[in-house]
Length: 126
Image (cartoon, rainbow, N blue to C red):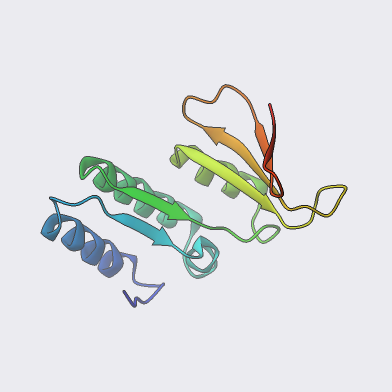
């Protein structure tokens, strides 16, 4: 779906319409880059937009995935965004000591503490 990142009302309406039309299916909503929304809109506006959208997605038993660019936002903005989502995953390409990419689950419902997974052979740390 193409959208104008400065028109969150239209985007919200279109997503809710899509969810309602497909209420018999589980939909995955992917926000490829929330950083664009945060650069073009006030963080409070994006927060309200996401909160309402996540409530609607849960009502339809759907899932929303979103990405944020690291280093582009104030820590308090990131903390507010993290509070909205049920899970936060950090991807560190080639950050491990042996050059193997790392996925770190920072926050996930039902997971009591941080979990780190490594690519090759998928080694897990808890």
